[in-house]
Length: 69
Image (cartoon, rainbow, N blue to C red; front, side, top):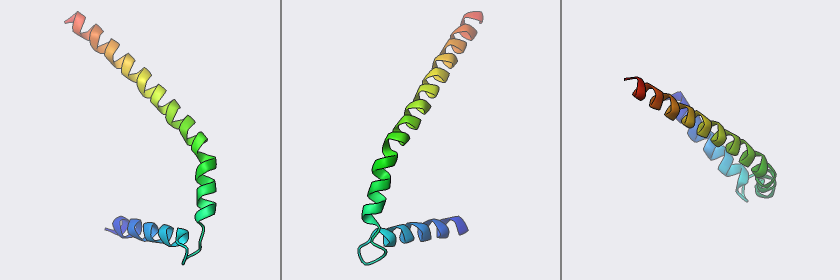
């Protein structure tokens, strides 16, 4: 229950920080997002490569197991 309340509180604080009537950090937040997007894309790409390799290994293991039975 505490996590749910804290989650909503953090979301409201983030919205207020970006809102023009709040801290007006909209331009700063957009600059950070633009700068971090390539880095995040690289990490997502690496994660997808690792998941793909694991999937290939799992399929090969399942195929070997099926052949032995």
